[in-house]
Length: 416
Image (cartoon, rainbow, N blue to C red; front, top):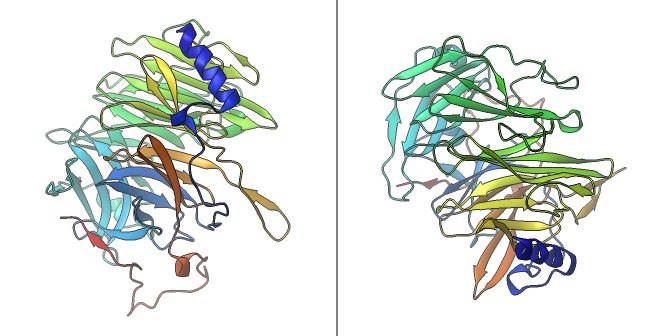
């Protein structure tokens, strides 16, 4: 372990090592008004959630070979609202006929040629569809079941039939916790245990769980623990990411950068329930097993083999290998600045995902997608942007013609 820690420190300071060299990116990256957010591996590329106000569609498709993202059409769904992971593969939530408010779930396996099949829809979902903006209160959550969704404070999960559970009020875990906004969270449903990770920025956050299978269960706080307590994670830090490679296991990243300070954490829950503190840093001090680590952790991702990848905004991308962090790509994702009328906008990464073929994708607030591919032991990077003609804000006062509803722009790619 001491050798791994020394290697990590040397690499962070010098940037040495063949695999950890600066990726080839254009000198002048193009600014994008639309931000890119959640990433979901799809075929040999990535489904990209984007800012629906600016972007051509809520979900776009990006692959390394392309210079622009393209609109997607999944099994006849006219408007794709959300994408998540279930036990059998990807879960797609969308409207079949947006003008009539008909909702349709479809689910596919991991192979590109897997057939899609529709899942039954609970009758209670109809009330959500009757709203003026269908889908706003309904979102999918990652699960070990076939599918799971959350509507306001009710969680639904599909085993052989749909089950539901109303969540009790989220407690005020600490003085600054924003309990009035309890459902702005990262969710993961492992069997009947629902994990919620809250991110309230500079006001902190929390990690907690609840057993949906027990009618009288309450929230169990898993954050705010002492550093050596193996029953949860330390501090009350914003939760940035929750991922799981197998039932009972969790990887949780926490932290933020604010007013020159950097708070970061990486914690692992073993299937036995024991927690490990791998990274725990407060500005210049580190007390985790993998130290020192100088960057905030923006997001986590798993590849097809279950290997963990870390997006560390100012330092680059790392992979967990043999109980140590292996540097993969050295790049400062915060290094790009763009002048606006009276202020300057800086680039910020938000999500990371690994495609089936090993390509790495990073979503950003103003650079579209940054994609990386390894060839001949060398990583190469490129920018994938929104279609140029669509990179503009729609007029919020302009009403669509009822006789000619707007169509999804771009040339859709039908999944077979």
